[in-house]
Image (cartoon, rainbow, N blue to C red; front, side, top):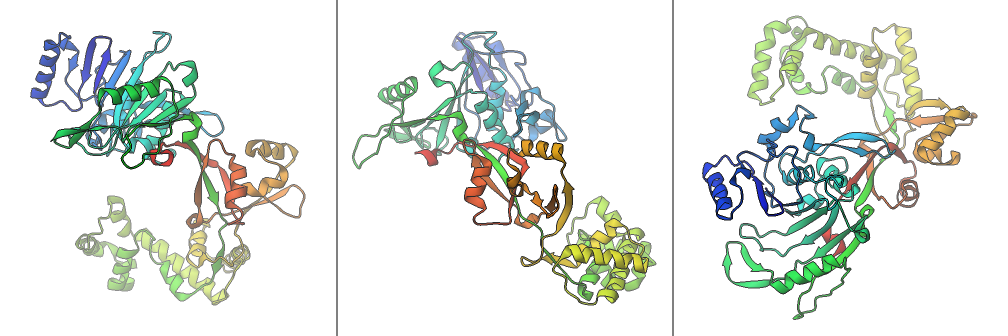
Length: 504
């Protein structure tokens, strides 16, 4: 990474463990009359060599798709980010500030370099001119990462702070060592009045002249006239439309957007759980095994039979050897769990309880889980079965499955007095007759609403533009097609992405 401040060049090189490269860089500074002391050995990401220093101008060409996993221990402690360069705050959907981690996936560190430069921008209180940044990236920095993910968080942080000035798409094969499409990100924390709240996208991908001889992947370049054309479009904040006809001279295209044009709400759409329930010998037998440990437990029971309940310790080695030979790769906790008496006793108790309930219900089919659950609860009490709430839930889950024709599973009934109702309507920004769109369904009783259990397999998300209204979008684009759905507004996340293919 290179950073400039007036005529002084400062550099902190990615993983510059190579002494030769370090020495060449220092000697280059000496030849150019710059201070070689400003060249530091070490990784830009793992060591903040210029902590507390800010710059007027910064330039970088970070490595594309380069893993930074070896640097993680310097930036994160477990799940916690410990480097202040990558600790930020963003507002959630409700406008409340929350801590956020500006950390992309470990396979690509491009945006970490950009955040490093952002952390070195001069505040306007220090310099009224602020700071300008130019950084060359491949396409992944524009759109990789979902709302709430590290890449999207970094884009959001930069755009919502109104630092993204422009992005210029460059021709393919412009660089010596790569043929892929690249982009120059131009950032400023002191935009001119006409650029505030705006981002200019410039497509210069067709603007180039061919080299007489290729240099590695590089087979083209910008002419001085091309550079002047790009600079003029940028300076004038131009919006330029060009249709390239066969044989016509190539020019740039440019468009100007509001910051919000790149943002979207990731909205979670829920649908109700609908369960059909029936006791069968096969489903009851499934209770014998832990869901996570089903394979080794089934092997052990089918191999050793009832002795598994009375002599598990003597069988421990053989069970674990089988797990290893079949490449199950159990964790230490699961190895211990599968060879513990209490694990087997717990699931035997579930089988016995399920068998007793089967005697009571037979193979009767229930299409209303709400009724079924109450009937099972009555039978548990009548038979005085020794099972708690978690065991009862395990049995109910084992004998129930989703059925689109079944009744919705009620989660709870909610009483809303005048104050609670007013608070809820304010929170959801809706009217009382619209509460069903947010998962509160009125009953025949005054002030009473039903909420339903959600079916995770049917859960979906919609990306709603920031300039659109979530509720209006739902009514228009979702509800006509899935009429039993509702918005889980509390799960809403905000994301940002920039797609050149969408605009050019």
